[in-house]
Image (cartoon, rainbow, N blue to C red; front, side, top):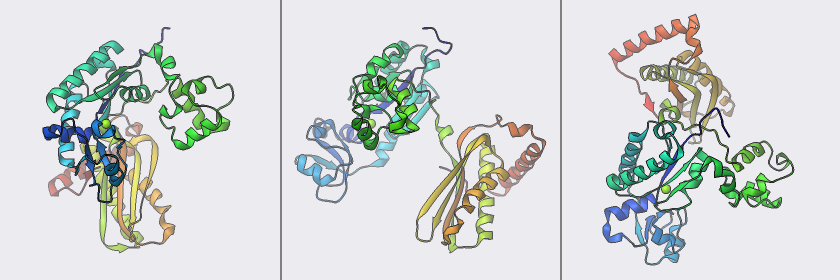
Length: 384
Ligand SMILES: [Mg+2]
């Protein structure tokens, strides 16, 4: 079948038993032994990661350490050392960025790569994946499992199928058949509740969804469409690089908890201006405005609004943030902290409002203000 768009080549890289593997790498005497990273077995707390040797005893991450200690009495319990894990993570991400800038980190040890341009076709993508595994082994002395597929859903599914040190390729032309025998729980977004609802209707495998004769919407509502698409291996979500996902925000904790609307308003105005300045400096604009409120009792809430265009305009950021905040005013609680930010970042210059005379003037004024701020010291803008 010819199609106008070439198929994409997406990789999902997932490190094997990451924290435990770093510990084994740094303590060779623990190689081949059941290593359990997390709380000690005589303490309250959970397992963060278990080596494959420990998994043989049934030890899993998020399990209470006491249970792990019972299942695996000879386990080597290690307190997590996040500094070393994050150093290893940086090295791994650097290997990935050598391949393509289109890297979307999902967590400390997982990332998507779009190698469509870098590889050409899925076979080239698979050999690129082999190179990446070799480079990670060489430079970081750890093993990774990689899934290679035409989209994110299938790539993530594939990376999990032959762990550890796996490489699994799912091709466009075999994806529907590939999915058929798998349990519905393999589909992204199918948690225990959805799974139970599907089992209720005798839907157990992905084939059962593909072949379902009735209307899945009766069972699942609006989610039915997405589920059906995924069951046929369709997923067009793009790989989003770090700066697209990250946000630029500014937060302030008041000296004393406050109910003063003018004070909160002034603070948000200043934050909108700081955030807009940081966006302009980095030549970015964002599609989502978000706020954060922490009350005197430490309860915290965040709210966000997605715009139909990207902005770096402080007036607009303030207006949206203030609307979000005003909706929360009814609580009457004193405010301890307020924050304003912009996310879903993209390179500037794509915003239609720069064609609008007023916005262009505001933009010029804002740049002049940035220059002044640069001379008289920066605010407290931070990246989140
Ligand atoms: Mg992992």
